[in-house]
Image 1 (cartoon, one colour):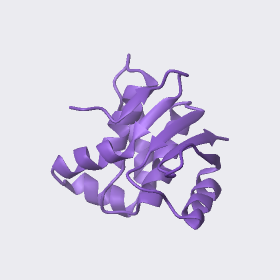
Image 2 (cartoon, rainbow, N blue to C red):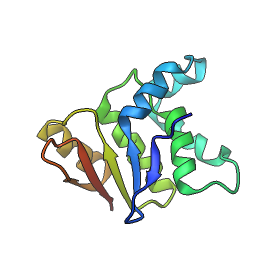
Image 3 (cartoon, rainbow, N blue to C red):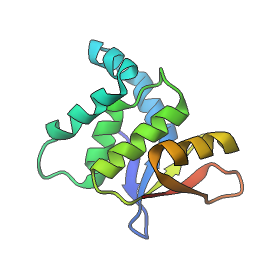
Length: 132
């Protein structure tokens, strides 16, 4: 499977949200998927079920496929992603989006995920997020 998480040259973890959306559409929806869409706190239970010996990047990828959902908003998915990254002790995440987010969406992400978002490109589709 194509991965949506990798390390960039400066050792930041990069999450390709477009690849994630594509991979998510290919997964079958389960009862657990329905639960995690309804109960955001359910995501926390996944962190203890990760196999040992995986890198932070690999853990984040697996958790993202289990916790994030195409049935909820991109803003809520990104907030969940940042909470997962924090749980994996990832301080900085570069997120590649398929399109730019609105300013109010970025503010909502910063406020709810306790982070600082920096736009990295002219199309506003690549974000560097510093997790506080």
